[in-house]
Amino acid sequence: MAKRAKTKTPEQLDAYRAKRDPAKSPEPSGERAGSGGNDNRFVVHEHHARRLHWDLRLEHDGVLLSFALPRGVPEDPSENRLAVHTEDHPIEYLDFHGTIPKGEYGAGEMTIWDRGTYEPEKLEENKLVVRLNGERVRGRYALFQTRGDDWMIHRMDPPDPEREPLPQRIEPMKATLAELPSGDAGWGFEIKWDGVRAIAYCEPGHVRLESRNLREITSQYPEVGRIREAIGGDTVILDGELVAFDDDGRPSFQRLQRRMHVASESEVRRRMGETPVTYVIFDLLYADGKVLFERSYERRRELLESLALEGESWQTPAYHRGDGAALQQASRKQGLEGILAKRLASPYRPGKRSREWLKVKNVRSQEVVIGGWLPGKGRREGELGALVVGYYDDGALRYAGKVGTGFAAADLRLLRERLEPLCVEESPFEGRQPPQGTNFVKPELVAQVEFAEWTSAGTLRHASYEGLRDDKPPADVVRERPVEA
Image (cartoon, rainbow, N blue to C red; front, side):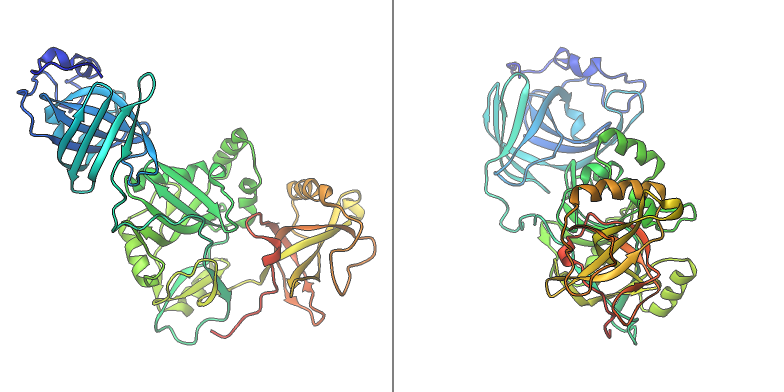
């Protein structure tokens, strides 16, 4: 930061003017400098340029000292955030908001995110200490130069005592398999999306996605990360489902498989174009500095809908109060997996499977643990013929039958790649055993299957493979039995 004269002249805004064409951009021209007086005003702009960021501007000697903040203003002294020192801006920028045209410097929408006054404690060439008194930001902040032209911004005050810390690593609440509740009073109903559950931790300029087994999956779904543009400067935690839609607009878990097991960034980008994924949002767990676990489902949905999160790769479908039977019938006609019934008064219970949330399925499906495989015969000779699967009961893996249909060529290749390193000599099953000739594996992979019914012997009849589930620990796979609502 250059040392400043006491009075500003238009020449000291040359850097600002050189980057802008007043005939094309609605921004203040910068031809008229400020008077040199200080009212110690500040403004924070939310700037949807090529990359979303926030611009902090402090009135000083007739201009605005300006810093671009890619992650916004920090709320906690435990973290420092990058602050990019940019050219001084004219004083009229305190009130500017609008859209800078495409092709111009800083193109994109700019809105006023916060404004107020500040108390200067230290204004030096390489360090500023100020107390911000804004509508959203209040407290002591230091901006300091680290090396070269790099700057950081640090909150010096303790966090706002009214603000609750952002929870981390939330295991999603789970629903219990059941029939439709006999009465609709007190229940809300949603479509059951056939995808992968994901919690989205959204902070200014940053989004992190975690699966239900707490594994970070952000890099697998980069299109969903753009939701940070819609959320802007808010900090929220969302609960939803990552869904791939088929050509008829129905959720397809099989199609989602094309995105679930990809590691390289280049391959993710390629498949993103072929198989786009949508984040379907149905709950809000943190907002406005408050943890919302104890709020009712009805209130959480109300707050969620106020965010108006609708975009190319995310959506917030409405839920239905009552009319569960009608929604189930409509979902069945559309070939969907089923519906969810949630008590309107239910809190959010992380990691718990509750009867306050019920899943009502149109088709029978079950997660199973792969304990082995059988060689193929006929046209599948030399390939995998069937999976040998089970579920856990009191800590023991119980044999649940074979899955021999539903495989695409890509599924067979992926399964062989994943199963071969897991081969073992001894059976992982306890009690009833699979057929002779089974190649046993460590029970580390979980698959999803559809089936006709359970036999009296406790095995799946006519089971068809849907895909692998990397988002669920094998030990959590149990035989699902419908309960009374």
